[in-house]
Image (cartoon, rainbow, N blue to C red; front, side, top):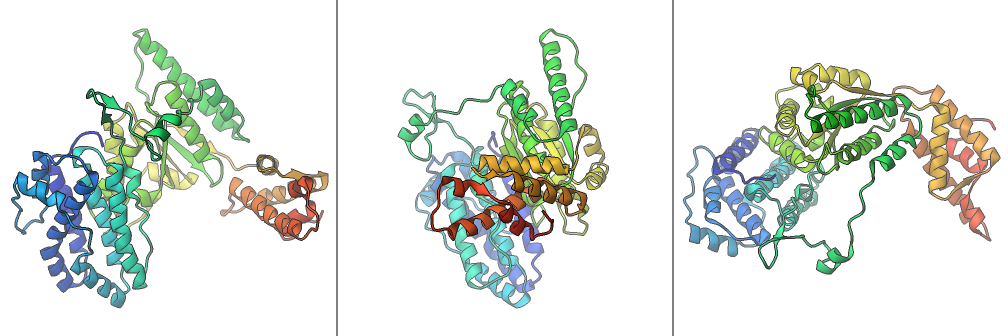
Length: 481
């Protein structure tokens, strides 16, 4: 997020998120209690977040604070000096009384209200942190600490569900610090100012290096050709722009279609760097999410959650794996379509510095794209990722061995080829491609470790050797050597 929110935006997001949660509570008595107590809790939470930030409390914060109320509840009217004092004297975080009632309801009904409330708290606290346009590291750390405290109470009660996957640190925004002369200074690294000075930035890979990395990937001949063609198209467009020549509209958003383990994420990461190298994207980072990273359990919060992910991806590529899950769910309380609408708007608002790649099974991705006219208009380039052949799976397996310091003798190579060829020929809808090759490698290493640990004398060659016996044990003796 780059610009501060308006008080009206804060009130709208607070009202939608908190109100929707309360309406979803089945226990009438708890709903009434929540409506009466939740504003005080979240206003206290805002004070804690702003205190953790350590920055100055400006008069604008008064309007943010006074915007935190539900429809029908009295609106606060704090004064500037009162807010400054309240932030400075904000007490340590305490779980609200209604949270104990919520956990009691969960115990009886086997529901997950408490876990969902932790998600709500995290999202609302991030909203408070971002009112100035920046989520600082201290703010994110404080939000995580408070969410963890609530999670421990749920764990102590043995409630269903687990820790929310939402990590506030994922939404930290780099905030330049002013130097002694008032000019921006580089923010210090986690290790301190000295560590920041001693850790030089890694040199960015050149276009030639990235293309060589692409060529070095196993298989994917059609995808490699498509990537090179796309890069060439963009390069020529930029040359035409430089010469003042007209260029037709071009969408750089992509659809990756294929089975799991076919290199979709690897190619997406390379593409993000390639786009940066040719000047299309300002940063070139890859942000990878799936449905759970975009969709919340109640109305209003999905939009906030998706906006935060988009903010993190600006300047780079947002890679959405199994994107079809956003529209394949049905039911009154499914908000996948809300995430899609936010994504479409973000793709338009940030069309010059954001690329979105959606990925998944071929048939399901076709259904996803055709589910919304906006998706069809923005995604018109398709990359098809074929299954790896048995020979390609062996090359991947052999590469894993070499990178990790293991050696295959002739018999082991022959056996590995047989196993991986049979794996390919017998593939079904659960075939994992490179993931299956990796699993076979990891099982082989585990079997080799059991064998080597029993040896009386072990040298370097013994530590490196993966034998046919190791591989047979890993494969369950499925193939005769």
